[in-house]
Length: 226
Image (cartoon, rainbow, N blue to C red; front, side, top):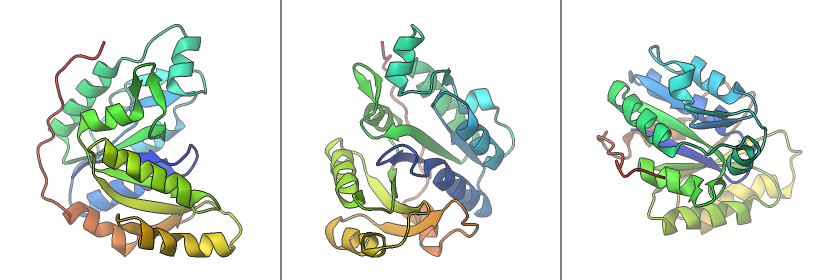
């Protein structure tokens, strides 16, 4: 079982959740690799995923596109007078799926962030044909952002496998203590126990993610993206 992680925003803890999923898969005896298709600015997220992955993968395989400008991919590519090579990402993912039991792909920013003028993160996720885990920060406003993201995922024909509310150190209040319950009542997607940057334990309700459907061979479309 492999996954695509998207966020309701940037900086909501996608990398931390990806590391949890990699740990969970490895504890189940699977060979797991993280993948950060696009890095903008530094490569810190990719390096953290590399450290959490099984042996046998390099950072360039894990992160095939590295733009040095700390901006959204399309903006960074324009500044650097280049274009994101989507085919390099698709080829890299196909190679990882041949060599590893599980590939945890961390998107960049949110679901509709542009990679190119005519190609969004949502297009990449659909091309990879993976169940999507939505990562959201447990704070005021998350209900709207999460519902919009889930509806867009479903409208693209993808499956949302779960929602993770991350505890990012926001002071507890009515919103943070009720967000999870409200999402359970209004969104027909599993709401997984929230985690935070200091969380060491993997929540028990994350474990069924690897059992929701049998492992399958992922077929990446070979249509070239120009």
